[in-house]
Amino acid sequence: MNTECKECGHILPEGATVCPECGASVCGFNNEESERPWYEIDILSVAIKPIMRWFDSGQFIRDIVCVLLSLAAFFFAAAPVYLSYSGYKNHALVGFSSSEKSLLICFLVILLLFGCFSCGYWQKRSRMIVKLFNPKDEFVGVPMGSYLFQWIGEWVAILAGICGMLMFFLSFLKVDNDSWAFLFNIIANRNMGFFVFGIGILVAIIFRAGAEGSRALTSIANNTGRQSRKEDVKSLLDTDNSNESFWNIVYALSIILTITFALMAMLQK
Image (cartoon, rainbow, N blue to C red; front, side, top):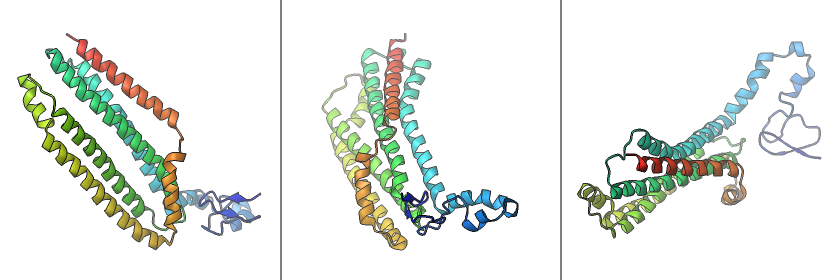
């Protein structure tokens, strides 16, 4: 039965001790060292080699980026909870009228939806990082940075588009309260909504074009067939369902806690 290299996934020939594709040792250290007595082996070198391979293969970049994106996802899920809890703890809504409280709750719900969307967006991207890059590629940092550049642009563009549509629809509402009318008229502006929506589209195009340009140069340098890799990336979002239950719990906790603290803040006197 053929086995795969743990570093690059290449099918290993029977009896191989070193991967012919990437040069990684099958046994964790090279064949020369395995045949020598233990007391003649440089123990420190054997201990350092996995760390060096972790850096040289670009794996450390992928791991760090995955952790950072996962932390970003948690941040966006926790932000609405923190704001609603702060409002409850500091009695921020005491003294406000019912209409003012309702308006603030509406903005909090919108923020909650943004947070859940951002959490889902970045946790999905963190799982894509693992699938996008091959350990045998010489250049890893530049294409990974290009993907992050593209994803940040897409994320900003989506949020700008949603904000633009909300501003457009809110412009049909009227607020009679003088203390909120000025702020509401700035936010709920039809022309501003179209402008923000257009800015979102422009940001998506610019960030995508810049990212694809840098990836094109890197793919030439890596001498890799990106067409097949591109097809894998397209199907990744549909096939990768790992940790879905965990993140569903995160969404549920974010929504429940945010709404609970918001209602408790509204009932404070």
